[in-house]
Image (tube, rainbow, N blue to C red; front, side, top):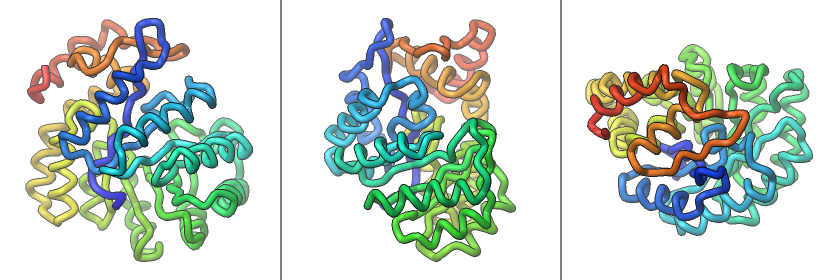
Length: 291
């Protein structure tokens, strides 16, 4: 089932920025051992924007094979071209992904009608469960709740990753969507509150570095244990904040490299974490007990 703590997995790269397949498999193994409930591969945090199509699909295949059905694998397959999103979504289905995550088409600023038709077309064309992904801070387009609710009527559009952090919006979608429609946080700082409203989990950047803690937090929140969930979230807040001192995934990849989990590779136009932020990220990790 798609719920709980879902890591927005980084894509490890060697120092020469080629893909590090051994590193990727090791991360999958670590998350399985730590209780992560699902793996989201090649999303924003997985540097989907810096991988070509062949690499993108190869990463999906690698994660699916390594996870071996033990947890759901959700493949990021969104694009600002409907035809490219079609290629990626079809490829993810062939690779054996359990679901796809499709970000709203970025940069070209489609209308709400354009957003509906884009996602309707992909849902009708590729028979795989699909999650919408609304993150206007990165895409410059905002899928409004009324558009989400119309798309929720399509059988294989099974949910949304809502990354605005807007609890009024989250409540509206949860209350008006079909009962089995998944509403998942894409904002670590507010994820507990969304889950306590009736949301289903958190697609998390912080889970890359603190998988056990995120899994525990989500488990408490899903069970309605608000005090326990909020207490964990309060302890994690410095890490949540540190992961966005520069554009994601710059801080999280640097953090994982400091923890010895991956190598230092990151692709242009992304750059390694600025020295200005090294001390802040290191301190947050040290306070959380991982450095």
